[in-house]
Image (cartoon, rainbow, N blue to C red; front, top):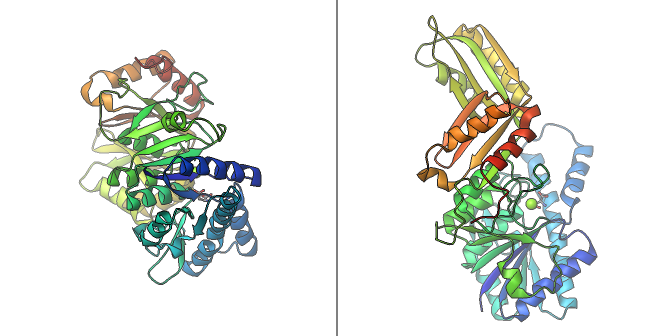
Length: 422
Ligand code: ASP
Ligand code: MG
């Protein structure tokens, strides 16, 4: 008998019929002898609906008072779905009880709309489990030191589930979602994309940070920190599929490079359309340029991703970096108003029609020539690379947005990702 955490996403909880299916699935696991803790998302569309209502009443610039109410409001979505799931389980003849984050309690800091979990008290949950109950805990939320309801940011139920699994020392945390696992790339772009049976936690982190939106990135960080065995699997299989088969399905996120791991050098191709490039041309090449430019950007709370500084010519250089597309205009305005006049730079130019494409794989640590293979494959397609950045297990290029799909398809093929793993 093991303690297992299940997490169900919004689509899986999307209607009474689907909630009933979730209940039947959970009941199957409980009847097989497992202690079950379930963390559901709000019914699909519910969080958006609630937040849109708030916006209708006040599009005003949000301050703390407003953010507090947003959390108070949005948290109700999961409170409702959790209670409905407990009711559905009771209808299946299982004893079940649901708790909101504050009732557990799941303690967080006070950063409304993006709170971080600080600790989870497992006493109440354990008491219920010992009494044979299935325990439902709301995703997405907790309570701050002042007793205010907080939420963990969009997609935060993944993090709730992993945090609960870590606190309970669960044998495994199963994330049920509307896809059946983690793929070598987005199957909508490359139909030959394959589901990975296993992916290392580090690779998952890179893929999650680059737009493979299967898991909230913070949940992956959490799983890595607390070594929570995590599996992503489909909630759209029949609920009565054999439990042993179900337990092996989907994608397992692993922590060790064990022998069973697929031996591919590159495990996946990630891409991201959400970036924009900014270049400052003709900056005097003197100490402090990077600090002057990026310091001002950081002070405005804008996150910078890829950075390039060219070699200088006649004492002047060009400096480029990427930011989230939402921060594009803000960054341009900031640089034009405050930074370039001070630096005496010639010009600020930008391009919001770029994208970032990356190859990811822990095998890159021990193999050479992987990046050059990537560059060759892009050049064969006539794709111009504007920027490059590398880490131990990833190489990313910034290219024109219109070549994104072509690049992803070419790289997927070049690294044999459409072939079944050896
Ligand atoms: N309901 C929240 C959202 O839509 C949290 C989640 O689903 O993970 O972002
Ligand atoms: Mg989600």
